[in-house]
Image (cartoon, rainbow, N blue to C red):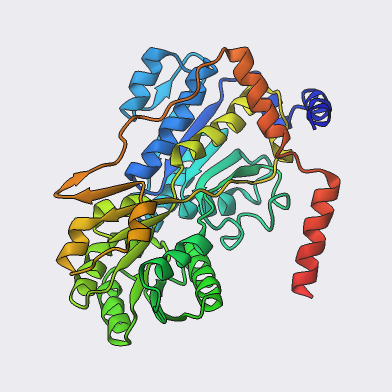
Length: 394
């Protein structure tokens, strides 16, 4: 395996994308574009900046400015910021502005921005490199067809939500549960994907699924009441932005029925969800994109040849305070799985800031190139994925 990886590295080290070559003459402009600020995507942003600093693309003084989210005209790179304010029209304008400002590389955070970036750059003659992160459903969103079947200027990492494990927690808490409720925003690919997976895994465990449609924030409390009136025994949100913004309304309604609310984003226990269970490695998301970005900037890897990264993780957190208000008692089995709990207004969450492992730049470069080599799309992989898509369509 090591010999195979080494051979791949040697071959790939001789490759340099046209995009990377074009940047030799000018200092590259990187646009970090998020749908809206959350504690979770803040970890992703930190991961990206940590890698840029480790590779000496930014120095300590420049990092201090970036920590304040100020645009940077640095010695080696220019970095501009964008925030969509959790609003699609604003996010669209944000991406257009980044393109107008001559961004060479777009780093969209969260599915809506990645989808917009992909759509706006698809037909450009010389598109910027797009490296996305915190995207749970890149295929449903139309960003790519499969890990290796995608536009050449697009790569990134999928925050793969383990819905199979999340749904199994419903049985762990309520062994006799027969009906689970969720919501779906048809305009949000991650919500559609969430509904599909919740339905698949719930039905496999003998649970019926009730889905209430939502199109705007005012629909959320109505949808919650509709689900509860239909007798759902738990609500598992599908992770749309509308559900997250309306989470307090969902939990308030559910509390009147003693029904637990599960979120596939662990940190949403801080927003009132009774159970947060889902993808929980947002710092790693930033590090993965940072590795791709650094290799591109150094011209050491053809990023267009990379498969979309996907490494699922499961974290579990419980809000004992919200559960007590709803007269919900957690099972011993679920309590044993919790990484942290909120009780008495205090969280037991480990607040140690994540960081990169200590190593020299040479060691880091070797480790990062080895990681990227594992994502290299061979002709066989491309053919297999295309054949699988053709079979599914047939």
